[in-house]
Amino acid sequence: MPDVASVADRVKRLIVDNLHLEGLRPEMIDEEAPLFGEGLGLDSVDALELVVAVEKEFGIKIKSNEIGRDAFASVASLSRFIAGRL
Amino acid sequence: MPMGATAATPAELAGAKSGRAGRRVAVSGAGAVSGFGWGVEPLWQGLCAGATAIRPFSRFDHRSHRTHVAAEVPPPPQGSVPVAGRSAGGRRSASDRSGRQLSLADRFALAAAGEAAAAAGLDAALPGLPEGAGGVFFGSSTGGMWEGEGFVAELFGGRRGALHAIASQQVNGPGDAVARRYGFTGPVETVSSACASGALAIGAALAALRAGEVEVALAGGADSLCQLTYGGFNSLRAVDEEPCRPFRAGRAGMSIGEGAAVLVLEPLERVLARGARPLAELAGAGSACDAFHMTAPEPEGAGAAAAIAAALEDAGIEPADVDFVNAHATGTQLNDDAEWRALERIFGERARRLPVTATKAGVGHLLGCSGAIEALVTVLSLARGELHPVPAAADAIDGSCPAALVTGRPLALPAARAALSTSLAFGGSNAALIFRRWTGPSP
Image (cartoon, rainbow over all chains, first blue to last red):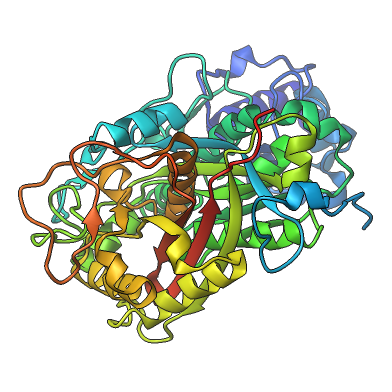
């Protein structure tokens, strides 16, 4: 299993590359901040983008009922979720 | 669904005949976005000055087209609803958290609805509205087509842009955005029957209000300039290289515009009960199809006349009660000739004397919203007692469609009783609305 920190770096890069958030750099993303609503302020359309990007980047499948659960709360939780699947 | 709706009392009904069915319906507020700017006042002032908003435009590169003018909505004034244009590469600002998914047409619709609701005093009236008693009836041809075009262009270039750009590309986007903003959970419907859409939507609102299905309706339309409509009408050679000149001998086609128009429609007794003054009464609506050709109108105007006759009957008035016409008047040879024939069929010899105005000469053709913005201008004309002129043009009125077009300066008509607004669409879809001047007491 890869270390969570390196997965988190890839997740942050993926958010910047795929979500079209102008002016956002990976180092600006707080790993513990909420992804949706508060924090990064992503919405349901971003969630779709993020799921597709994660599946492609890490070669894993994410079930619909896993989206919006604890796994997608923050960069940190998403990275732990991904690392557990690799 | 119980609405708590009550019929008008005999006292309230006194002074004017009721239409064919049910409750009388008042226009209690109006809001608009057009090539003249954001709001009803820039629209009205531009029209009354005999100006035109049809001019060179910058939304997209149109060098490959035959024509190079349109009535593009200017940037919104400082501090108002932001209009996030689609920036290069489909990037969006991380700081813009609100409404990233809205299309330009959605933003026009929200601005017009906000102005109309404020004018009607709806903020105070909405909290007591029963669940499901608010409805939205919209017309649109483009919805978020402009944003969709950008997404597809990027896709063909091998890059998949932001999904937000197409989240609201559907034609029902503007009306749905308005419903969400006001929490209207009654019927929310979008009509897309080309250039009759806005008028048909207002007709649908009238029917729902009369039937007691809704107590408040936000009715109108929104469209934005985009490449499909601009290029499409150009390909049909239906666009004039100059700003359109309806009913003129040298007319050479339409001009495309964009924007939104929203009317607040309510039962008359509801408006009076809260001490508001109606802008006008929406007295009747009618529609009829030519069933003739995909784009050309039936040349004798039979379908258009049938729609007008149906609206008059619905309103319970005679042609002689109509004191002016806000014509569809696109400026194409075929439309204006067929429309003139329809007016002659209805008004006979009087057609040549009946004052006619052509709002499209000022704001262009708003396509799915044209019937809505022209209904709004008709309402303003009744409420303010004057008919706006069309911009000056060198060529004379065409002998084949000799309408009594208002030119030069506004025509004062303070005692006009009723007015007709026509919408004659591709597919032969014809719609007509009748508005009556409010002559009742001021609160």
